[in-house]
Amino acid sequence: MTTRTLGRNGVVSAPIGLGCMGMSDLYGPSDEAESVATVHAAVDAGVTLLDTGDFYGMGANELLIRDALRARPGDRDKVAISVKFGSLRGPDGGWGGFDSRPAAVRNFVAYSLRRLGTDHIDVYRPARLDPAVPIEETVGAIGELVTAGYVRHIGLSEVGAETVRRAAATHPIADLQIEYSLLSRGIEDEILPVCRELGIGVTAYGVLARGLISGHWSKERPPAAGDFRAHSPRHTGANLDANLALVERLRAIAEERGVSVARIAIAWVLAQGDDIVALVGARRRDRLAEALGAAEVSLSAEDLARIERAVPPGAAAGDRYQSAQMAMLDSER
Image (tube, rainbow, N blue to C red):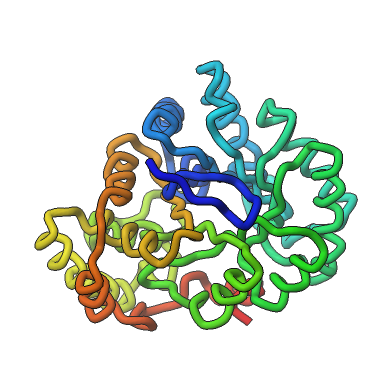
């Protein structure tokens, strides 16, 4: 695959990266052997960015990535690992807020390095803005880790334009990780322009709206036990009906082009700029292969216009998170 650079001097990545969260948490049961095989298939296909969080499965996802990379010597040097930190979990899996104090940053990175079995993390980022800690303090602490060689680049996640500016004034920022898809276009008004002004890349997650616009979701597919989509506003009730109707509009365009719905949805994200890398949350090799095919889909100006008419900005029914989680997003303020 071709490459894109996150930020002015950040990670060089293939256009599509692999989001590993669902392999260990939040999407219901998964097959660890298949997950490891999917990581290997991604590396073989030229994927160079693996995204995780130290709270995905309370460390289990980092251990999975470690095992996948250890199984094939040399793979670690082929990929960049992006880690989110700061989200607190309880023994029941519940959420306990955020901690981005400098002392916590140093603690979290020490555990991630050990679990990942690596001497450095390529991109390190707070998962959310800690309202009790100025972003300058958090970024400054990560900057010290960059100087010490434990971290290569600093990233951000789900923060608004003003926070991006303050962070960038403290230390160079490689990228902002944030939800961006045909159903989630809030970054276009202010956040994306500020990132481009400052030379900050975007790693877009949720490019298939957590499976909703993959072309595989249906009302007859109830979420499995432990799948947070069972409570997602966009995946339930009348909202689901409205959103699946949008998917059918998109399907008509995809079928004319001879590609899957997932591929055309991911290709749309990639077409929004060479400073954007799309993260796909594939847990299986077949889903990964489908997603990676999007890198070969070239959308014309007419294709993009038709897609925009089929799924215009603001067309999604329901928020992307429940209200309590929405309130925690600096990017939504």
